[in-house]
Length: 139
Length: 202
Length: 119
Image 1: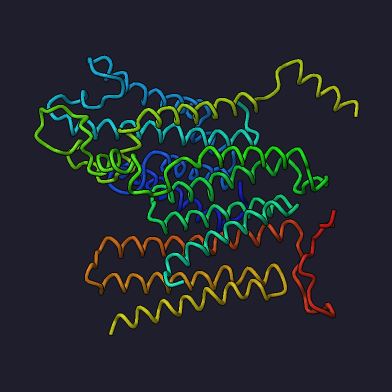
Image 2: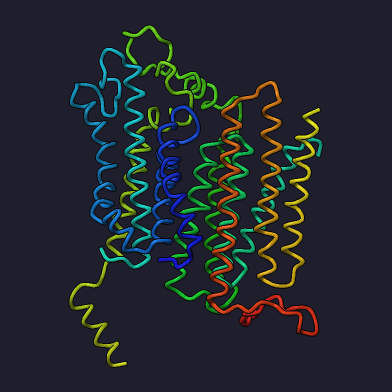
């Protein structure tokens, strides 16, 4: 826990805004610059800032290790799941247009959003795990 | 130097090369980590200058953010000065020269960078830019693949046209995370007792 | 008329940023070097981004969203630059770096905690 009041105040003020900005970058990946990778790094950076300022125990209570590990696998599973939905419905792997048979073009955009969400989840979890492990937190 | 944009590009690249050389030269590891952060920042500005916004975003976030944090956290566990050693490694130099020569010779047959007559630029790129590859069946009367929902061409290529590559990239990142967990886990029973015993002896 | 105000603001901001960098090179001691990098750069970016938003407002392609984004960036830098300067100087104080007093006869020793660099 950082003993400086200034740093704890400003860090606590910034933390929600960084998370909101990460969400903005994730959702606007199709309209402007952005996407899954950038948003994942931003969200991980927010939690790293939190752990630097408020101590490892508090951040561990906020975001326990099992949750981070779970979301690491969930991201990859989401991506591959969207692909398998295409297989199940009779088309080829990673065909997004089967998600909405009446509007294939809209379904393609929906598939891309889901896939980018999976990428963002995995990237955020992996970077957070790496920094925590090097800092010496137990499994 | 009649073109000011070219001047800025050359200046940024020279500064980036200078930062990288300085990071290699110094023996103070903390300074080297900071110089790598500066290198990433200069490269992010260069990408933004070339209008590659997605790449600039990722370079700034990963290079000047996550990578610097990871290296600094690793520095807390090791010393902060590089060990003194010989400055000249002949085998390393030979390996780098041979690999570099092979790469340069191998890629010399590729079309020139940005060549308007290359097969990729003539056949593939216009379809990606106008998004009329034809993934969608003929049920909808739109020429567009995505119905104007995806103005960002980079995300369209990344997530839809080259979706397999992104899937394997995600799998690679996941594997890296799993490897970090496996390598840096606490020692198992017998090894922990062994290191604890040696610490008590010393 | 207002374009000249925007240009003047940006040139003034550039002058402050330049003098900040000059101060880092010329000042004698770690703590005194933190002043230009923290304060001077904050004022510099405030003026530069203020001039840019004036330019965007009074240009033909003026867009309220762009001005909002520039104001948000300026606010973020305004909040985080002094906080990071505080963090740096606090760590230096806690690890025992002593400020340079004028009591030394010559110029300050620029590297107060240096080990042997020629190994």
